[in-house]
Image (cartoon, rainbow, N blue to C red; front, side, top):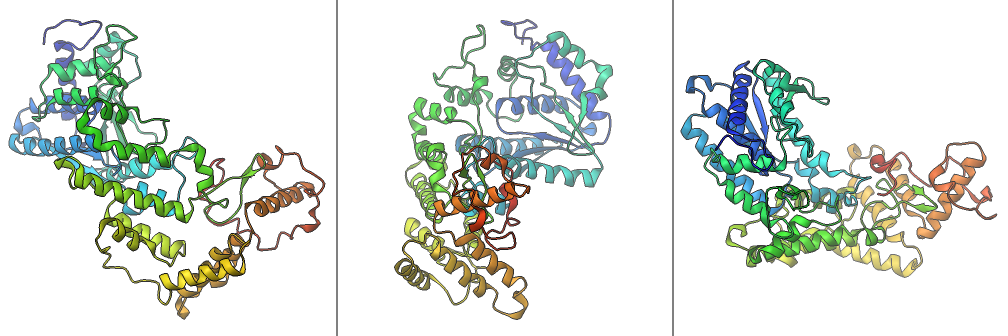
Length: 529
């Protein structure tokens, strides 16, 4: 590469050689192992490539410190990008072994009982949004932190290398000064959340174009194609172009955002939309995009969720009840659709995605246990749904069942409740909840807190409907306010009350069992859940 500046780009041979020299000195300065975050995107690729080039240019006898390359597989990554990253990791492993390089690859995954589908379809968590962003911590942060904590416990300290950059801030003088040889130790920043973790961000001052110039001018050292990476980014832009930023209004590959295909933190997944629009060979991802848009529909979301919170209690704001987890029929419908999409991709998608797994058997088994044991849905509908969609028997060798009740008893009870109490929306849920709590407690060693559990089930299920629950909650909050107690100000102070609303003579006293307010506080203090 010529030592020149191209359209304001400051990535020159001298700069890269200086950075390689700095990385080498930092690597040799101590025995602290390195961990590099690699997502498969351009920034993490550039950071890893820089480190790789630096260590590869060291004598073999100096390559003694392990460099762990970690890739966080959330299990809901964009399938194209996920495959790219995993294929890249295989190349890295093989190349490192052949060249006697100290790189070790690791694919980190969330715990099976904390995946996206287990929480959304199993527990019924509302899809992630700005005020309820439950996904990032469970799917990304915890797996990485668990890995890093393990390495810290083994070595006392680690250095985490990240490809993070300051948004559109490229002060070249500061960049050069930042990488001066005598300031090697100053390149390391402490992590605010993890003790004994130091962070090294070699690309901190780079622009999008700096990254692309480096990737295009320096051959990928582990034998993968950076040109193909560029093509991947081009396919994820609306117009299929990926120019260098010679003018500020031109589109840039840097604006492409790869991540979880289920992400609902943005209104639209423009990257996947562009991939499908630009390449007919990627049209097989259309059902994924459609499904994401279906469950991420904000306008329809309220009606799909229970008006009680996860623990069965009531919570409100602006004169309305805040809705909680997804209803049984919604969770079952989405599971069926997910399995249908998986089958469709397996049968009609590209050959390399024939075994693409949207949801794993392990996740399905966890969801089954949540539905049956935690939610008392002893109908046990998951194996039936699975077999109806796939034509295969659901394999669950460790399943013990719930005892005397099953599908037949479920529908008999449902018919009886609908016949005797047609106006009581929660009568069936109350009955199957009480029966299953008692059924699960058979045996003297299982009857601890049985009365408390039965009482909690009654407390969360005897409202006639949402209107009845809302009237009760309003009266309760009014009574607390009138008597100087702590009440839900956001709910009550934003509505105009009638005389009947403030008549607290109909309200049960605070010792009743109307609500179990101490249960399931997972979603408390949130407005929209």
